[in-house]
Image (cartoon, rainbow, N blue to C red):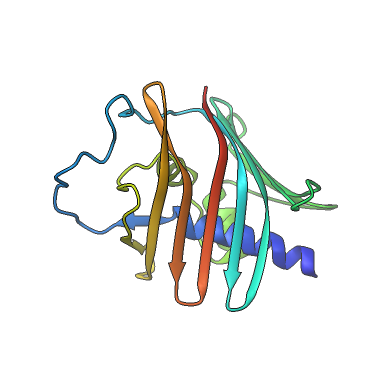
Length: 190
């Protein structure tokens, strides 16, 4: 039961972080992307950590995400490195699979799968943009609105420039008693 809560909390947290859309902003005086870091990588690999606090309960783990021309593979691991769940999106077959131990769920899209399991449609394209700081200014809180009208307070911190790309070392999102932190230890464009 605890493992199921952990997996659901992590995927809900990721969905919350990435299913947001920005509210209209006035153009910033300082560019949102630093010089030399103005492109978004279509394909990349990411290793990091994620924590989710709901009221006084905190769960954390590791996340490994690989995105290439064939699709996506997101692994969720316990803090000690044991795999808890894996989400695989295959562009050729147009199928998405979520594996949790001996249980497997499939759907036609990530959004469909996460909507049925978590009640939130996960948008991996949006997540890829957020990790790369698209539309977010470093160390500034931005009010972001989910598709259901919820407003989350989001911060991207410690941008790292990698050639023509950049990524945020930490993304934090909060709404009421929920706080989600994604710490990116390694991000490599493909």
